[in-house]
Image (cartoon, rainbow, N blue to C red; front, side):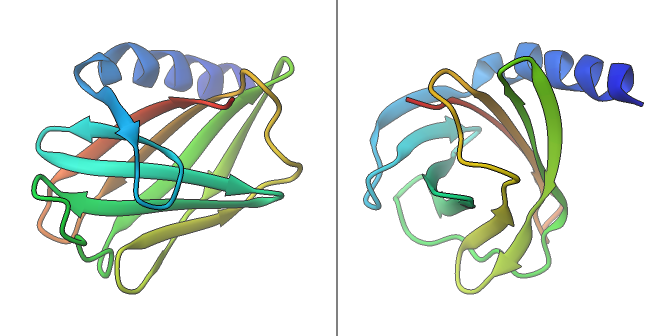
Length: 124
């Protein structure tokens, strides 16, 4: 199972190349553009929050999001974190421990409209 998750994480990182990092988001975290949607990641302690917005930076509803998860590679370990939709535009998960510097985070989800999101971040 661990090999499968590691392979999935590496594949997701490779396919997420179309997502590119923008400046800091309105909540202070790094933000990436994913096919016209913006995803901002904010990690505080063991809480991981992803803010969703459209191309015009207006909140994008998280209700109805399916299969939302983050795959974390940190200090040689890989973990999967389930993400729950929280109104109006957040995906929230709980980390086993705070992210270390250089941790790789790959987020994937399917929005209610069927649009698939994949975003990649590196923790600072």
